[in-house]
Length: 589
Image 1 (cartoon, one colour):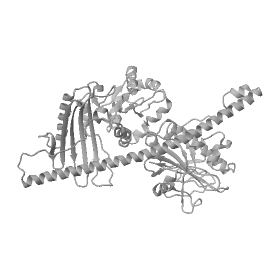
Image 2: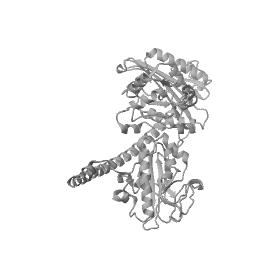
Image 3: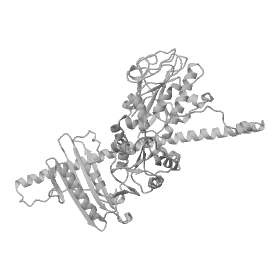
């Protein structure tokens, strides 16, 4: 963040707030100077600064090691004078990270340190055109909406903007105090915070018709907002009121995940990037070079060497994580490129067919039929995943078998078209299962989607993959995660490798997939499918099934239709039926 205060004043405020923070932790802030100061038995404070033709900076770094097994918490505060292009602004950076005690341990997630809040209260901090504060600003009227939309579209914005709405009929002050403030508790210094009042919601949602937020929900608007482009809405996740009220603490952690990730991945401004890496040195001693002093200096140098090794290990882990993320992104890009080509070919084929049929209808004099409205089934899509669960009763060959709470949790990660694609996929699977049960379907689901048999509820063949990549199939861990329960009538071992799947979507931190398995040709075959919320790890969480019978997680059936055989699986749910197909929905984070 930056401030209009000059460098000298900002350094004075930063040092004052730092001293107060150290006192609140019962540390000794006296004697702070260049070099290293021991402020407690388990804590040190390093300070360095520099000024010259390229500007000035001051940096304080505290390292806390409460025990030999706790690892080290490192908090860094940097004040940097702006470059000429910063127009007199001063930059302030606060970092906190955990360095595990041993190799192989994962760092503990960090919360916003107290000094970040005190600095925001003491400084007039800004991000682009927006004020960065610890308390959300209220958007109450049309003028406030105009200012907010301008801030959201600001090309110089670096932070996400998080907007909470007040439900109609709720007292705004009470809702802000009891719901919004606890929900925003992890966002101080990571995002610009607003509360959208009911009177301002209508205009705001008209201005941002593709990026609305309402009904007690919360939306995170990342930098680079394009209000006129509907696909851009996928980049700005919505958290539903249902998710918030189900548990504010959990919702707050979910809400903070994206701003925290952006803070880690976003490149620093040029002024802060130019700050040299800190090279800590022991403070010179005025005592003679006796044996005790040499031992003290040796211990200090050994400690610095250990710190350097820890820092190097942390950077290596960061680089490895970035390589893994790059590989995952490249695979996703390849998938999207192939999917786009297939969809384009299908679109062109459809356009040619439409032109051909219209020409024939024109020749026959059927102009009204050629250019009239399409007589197709009307589809009303669910508004949330919670709504999707409630409406599964509309699909007689679909039954939910998993954890409803986890499925509803997708609402906090979902983007606009996930629900539409998921519902289209479930409609197609429901029709496919029904046709298969009646002996009217041949081939697999991909063949069904490519044929005219899909009829009223088509699903893009480009979003159907009949096998996993070799990387997944040959990786023991990833393959095991897709060894999912099925009835023993399908497989004597009660598990099969489900690799065929539907690509529901991507974005944010999850990529939904609907995996399914076919038992082979003939009237006795069945199909199991699993909904996957694919992320960094792929641990099974919940399921959905489509067929004429059902097996649910925990052994509690949700739906059982006539003429079914109910079979229980160990960790997930699957349908069983002697004729027809079964689909299960499961989510993996």
